[in-house]
Image (cartoon, rainbow, N blue to C red):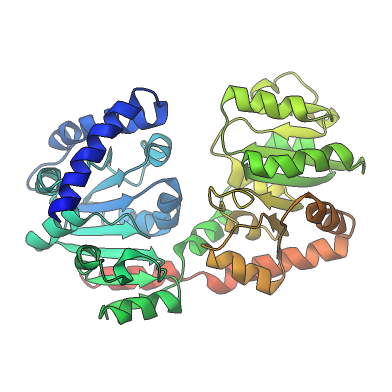
Length: 412
């Protein structure tokens, strides 16, 4: 712990230096400077509070079904939501499920004590991971209750190594851990953590809720114009290196493509548009244009991809062709859409399950993409069958939220 604390101070110092040259890191560094001031003005000593912590946007979306119900059922509690990453905070800083949204200060003993003295949570809910030893130690010192939900563990993590004493101690502060699968439970049992339940992944409940939302986007309807539509969601350059040649070379005229890149910086968007040889329109430039006349629609904005998937006949979900991490394949699956991904999905058990079920295909390169994607485009019966398999997979796996909430309701 001594060396860990020294490491945190060193990392914090270097983070501030690097932030001078990196806008994303600068958002986090500047945001953390405001955390305590915001809390001092927002939380009173007599307030009952709940603390939700998420590393980033993906974990927020994972925890949202639980957060939303707690917001409704405990309206007298003030809810504090923290993020570590700017990609979560900047997008959800105005969310209605929390009274206060702030960056989590760096994990020093001083910060942890000051933060928890200000927030004094009746219950803390962490999503999946992002477990900080000093915060956990302070929670234990104050006798505060904490849960970890939608957790996923692998045997190569430090918790299960001989040198992992500090992290095991941090993990032991959780009074209960809700894991996604049997292997995670087995790993926890191996380090003598017994207060664990297999609840599954709350993301299934999250995406299932999407079916009850208004998913209509008139401009997407205009663009699609009744044609078959391939939606390419959260693509990275490694994905686009396969997909751009496919779009340019595949000459079936009644196919439309929607590309929603992960990075929407102007330079990257313009480079993407330049490489496409078919009529292409950008979301930011669509006003006044007849969208039905275009073959490719680049979505250079955020926040609407989950709705766009409702218009997909086929989805390619990015992140797994490179090493950045596979994006959410459950979002298109709930709409009954067959899905294609890249080759690097080792850390995503849902990908293995969906491949085994048959509704998801992994491709390792351009040749395989060019052999697999036309088969789905040109065979309506095959598309419908694969999509139905994916939707059924979502239906079978939802329900984690109720199990978690049943536990929480006993104690608040």
